[in-house]
Image (cartoon, rainbow, N blue to C red; front, side):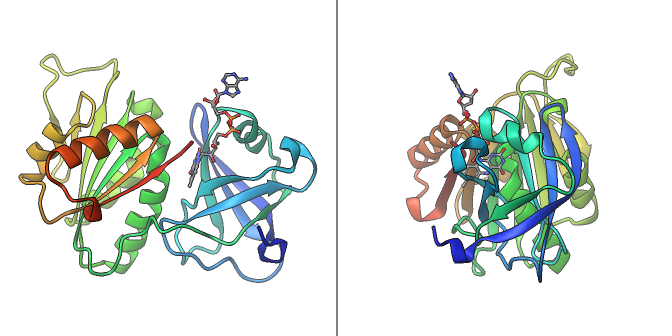
Length: 247
Ligand SMILES: Cc1cc2nc3c(=O)[nH]c(=O)nc-3n(C[C@H](O)[C@H](O)[C@H](O)COP(=O)(O)OP(=O)(O)OC[C@H]3O[C@@H](n4cnc5c(N)ncnc54)[C@H](O)[C@@H]3O)c2cc1C
């Protein structure tokens, strides 16, 4: 990593999104925010020897036109725990945005498959497209154990209500409040809730057919591998599938 490309940021705000998930809003200490493409990630470093001087990657959950840069972090281990302990006003180093997990201009029909915290890059891409009223058809399949675990549920639902090009299928696997028949529930015209894990059968049901679509899969290694395999078994060519696993 080139230290010249690091920039100092200060934590300005923190939003608790779920029990163990928070959004951290950073502002550059000097100058402008880092330019990035929605879908990219940054590496975050503490200024002291916390976490042995090692940095970790986090997808950017804000959009390029925002004044701040935000990441949304699930507390699961040492580094994410230290981020959750960060105080407002503390500084961190953030590297130049990286990664190619960004849909290309010519992609018109895009299917996002998010497992839990794997929603972060898609949240940025969807908000960015919404702000530009992009000429795209977006489908988001968002898997979580329960509604309580699912971050940005309301924000995404509100976007889908006011933008007919975005369709959302939430998939809850352990939601305690289930409809008696566990059948798909329509929340609004563009938002539906399913009560099982995301699989190709679910995709076929809501997409009608799997062809002529670009698939982006993000989440744990297990989530990404399972769905990638299922899509391949259903004759989706590798060129049409992009993945990012949070390890
Ligand atoms: C491109 C990219 C983008 C990412 N974006 C995001 C994002 O937007 N949001 C996000 O939250 N994460 C994201 N991640 C994941 C993030 O980089 C970290 O990997 C994550 O926060 C976990 O780091 P940690 O140090 O807190 O956990 P670690 O300490 O590395 O722990 C990881 C796992 O190991 C287990 N573990 C830890 N210590 C032990 C032990 N002693 N014995 C047994 N098990 C143990 C933990 O329970 C946990 O399940 C992204 C990763 C990549 C590659």
